[in-house]
Length: 132
Image (cartoon, rainbow, N blue to C red; front, side):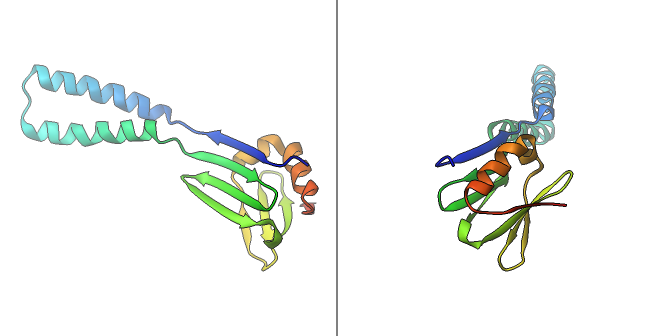
């Protein structure tokens, strides 16, 4: 068992880059033709949103430490103590953490890219793995 196991994938939207380029081109045309203020009011927020989407990258994955489990699902992070986890259930295209209370937490699809390591690290921490 390793002290810490982390598997993260950072996503970046290709559409944001295309939106930023097209928005900057429209902004250049608007500046060249001295566009009215309402055109600037429409273009500026769109460009700022594209820049924000490029700057903020959502992370999907899982992080095991000696005593806790963290699940990264986009822009959110959920941490659980390992003592609350009953088992990990694997399906053909999904993975679910089942808690002692019976609640189920779906893991992001990206954690299944490294299934063998996920199973190894989960069982090394004393959490049984069950398959459907």
